[in-house]
Length: 190
Image 1: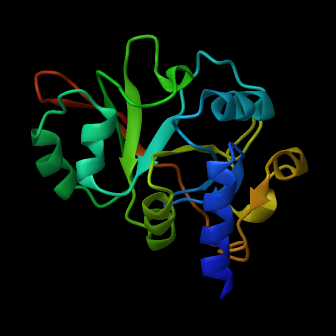
Image 2: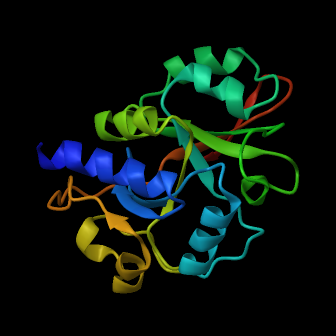
């Protein structure tokens, strides 16, 4: 078994056991857990020293997964997403099927459908959405490469993915769009 496959297998095991992983996403390095496990989500808030009122996003593998986590998603979002090339997180109203401490006070949740092969396989093999939040202590800058990640974050997770640790290409966070009920997106971050 190669490192890539081992990383997927170990990550899935840790996620199923309510643990935290440090992993390369389709954007920047992230801290992840089972998006349906409120205790695991709490662990991330504590590790990041982040207020529970600041929501985190989830990653899913396919368009159809939105039906599990969004009550009545507007189908026009699928056409919109076909036209974007940069990884884009969409904030949807009517979040469902995730831990309550992931849902914003207004009932919304940020979801990104991943295209990166590693993330897509990880989420697919896990079989549920995975939390994704930048691998930094709250108020500190998000790390662009693995070597920028604070040792406290590395020591606070249950598994660190080996894949792409030596990648020195500077990464950027995703674009963020709020999908409004009228079908018109509001761009929050380009």
